[in-house]
Image (cartoon, rainbow, N blue to C red; front, side, top):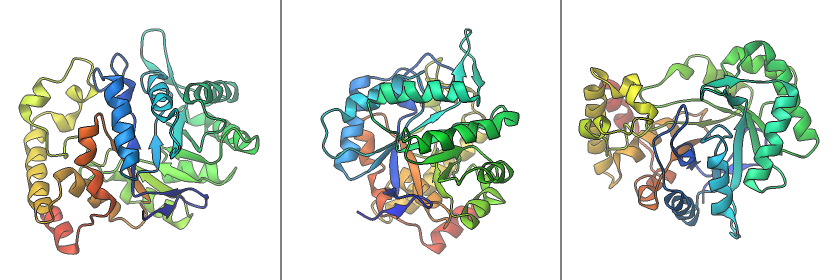
Length: 313
């Protein structure tokens, strides 16, 4: 299996990894609606069996439930993947979220994640969001100390811009950045990706299929039937007038992908992997069946004409 090093770490990643956001289930601020844990476990097993070697989750996904599902799926397996998780997003009593980068809070979160994941050390521990901004240095210093203590093997950031990464780099090297990136979300191209490339910071992008919108299975009827707690109901890209245009883009991806016997989702993922600063992409899956629709992204790449075709659209 072709792998790439993640920044300056000793982690070598397959081009795509397992995203466990939706596996957190329903009932929290950024849920994808209800999710069957047995299907989540089956999805993880199917992806690992096809060669993926890393999985990304977070403490906030289902307020710990996603991490528990990951642990259940990995129990007893010999070919265990790298396990990545994140800290700094906490639940308020009313169900809303707040950020905390205080040292004691991060340490408490780390211990809870170690327990839920049932691991001795976390392969990549990441600050989920740089909030509150004024505590960024305290939070990053804490992650660096957790690495020194052996509780985590590598440390990274998520949703940081170039200036925030520079502040963290002044304290300790950043292994990786996890930003949103897709054909429909390109804000990181101007300064964030160039900074990561210039400083040998690995980049693992999330939502390459724009939360399933570009996977090829989305329809207006499906969007209209989303469960009440599916965050996508209120996302601008899933509402008109953008929805119709985005579904037309998915059909263009279907046309391009069909020339190679691939799926629209694999084409969308390949678009993100074409960027030289991108190490790998996180691909969310909710069932073993969905693995078959994305696994081709391990080795499928768009040519220059196909990239221009997408740009023309």
